[in-house]
Image (cartoon, rainbow, N blue to C red; front, side):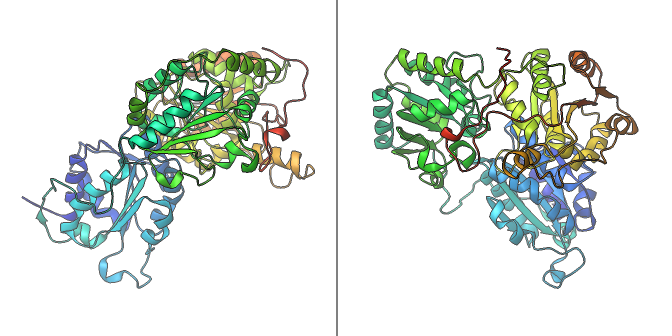
Length: 564
C-alpha cells in the first residue's frame, strides 16, 4: 500500500504506541487532520489554545512516562506551542510536537502564516527537524521519539510542509534500527567515579540526599529508599523531586531553598556531604552559590554531563541513569547509622517548624491545601502553575504516591495548571486529579474548561482566589516598598458563574468551615468542577530566602500562635 505523508505520520505514531494527541487544527496542518479522522486508534483532544496542547502533552507525559504528543498549524499555531515546549525542555519532559508548515515553494517568501519554527525553537528543544520529503517522515518520527525519551528526556519538534503532508503517495517503510552518530545516552556509571562516590558516602557523618526530578524520570523510587535506609541518610526533595520519597518516612526532610522548609535548608548548611541525584542546583535551591552548603563535599549523579559543575562544583560527578547508578551503588554502600545527625535535624524541625498554620477565623490558603491533603489522604495527583499556590501545594500537601506532583518548575509558567491537569487525567483516568491555581494563572488558560467539558475530563479545579498576582505582590511588599503596581485584580470574573456558563458546577467557599464540605462535594460530583476559594489577600509564603541570598538571610513567619 501507498500512503500520503499525513497518513505516514499517523502510521508512524501508531508504531510508536501513541494513543493520544493534543492539538488544534489550521490550514497548513489540515492534511494531517484529514488523515487523522481515518485513524480512530489515535485519540485527538481538541484544545482551545495551542499553548494548552503542549502543556497537556506535558502533563500526560509526566504521569504516564510516555512521550506526550501535540500538534499545531504553522505561524501563530506553532508559536503558541513555544511556552509549553520551553517548559518541557527545562523540566526534562519527553514530548514530540508536530507542526504544519507552508508548502515548500513558499518557504522563505514571507507566506501567509509562515514562521521559522525550527529556528525559533532551536534553544528550547532537544532536537528539531524540518522534514522536506515524504520518504523522510517515518525515519524522522522514529528519531524524534527515541531522542525525546532517551538519556535526559526533552521535547523534539517536527515541522512538515503542507505539500509534504498532502503530496505524492509513497510506501510506508518503518525503519528497524537507528544510527544517530554521536548520540550515546549514558547508562551505568564508570567504575572509578562510582567507587569514589561510594567512598565519600561511607565516610560521611552528616550526609544528605538531594533527590531531584531525575529520580522520578528514572523511576528510582525503591532504589532511593533502599539507599537512604541502608546508609541512614536524610532525604530532601527539590520542588520537582517531590513525591520521589514518601513524605511520611522518618528520613524525609522536606524541600529546600527559597520557599522550602527552614530545617531542610539549615540541614544542608551543616551537612558534610550532599548526594545529589538528578537535580540542577538551580538558584531557587542554592541561593547565593558561595554560601551554599559550605561544609559539604558533593556527589552529583546525573544523566546529563552538562549539569556537572554548572552551578555547584561536584567533588565526584557520576554520569549515568539514576536507577542504574543506584543499583550499582547499593551493594557497595555500608550499612550505617547517623543518630546524632538525625537528632540534630529533629532539633531544627522543632525550632523552625515552617509548616505550622496559625489559628485564625480567616480563610488561609495553607489551610485549604492542608484540608485537601487530609480529604484526599494524599492520594491525588496535584497539578500547579507557578506562584504562591504552587509553594503552598508543595509545602502542605502530603504526597503519598510517587510522581504525584505535576508543576511548572524550571520555566515557572502561569496557566500551566489547567491544561497540564487535563493531560494528567487523560493519562491516568483512574486517579483523582486536582488543578491548583491562583486567580491570575487560572485566567490565562481557563478557556480550556471547554476542553474538559467536551471530553468529560474529570478534573477538579481549585482556585486560591486572593484577588492579586500573589507572588509578585509578595515581592512588591518585601522588596519594593509596597509599590503594588499592576498586581491587584479588580476585574476578576465570577468564577462560579463562569463554570456554570461552561455547564459545570461551580462552588464558592468564603469561610474555613466550608472547605472540607466543598472538597468532598467536588469529589463526589462526576465530571469537572470549579471550586473558588476566596482566601486572605495579603497572605505570604514563608519561609523565604530572598533571591541571591543565603540561608542566613532566611525570613520566617513572624507569628507566635502555632498549630503543630
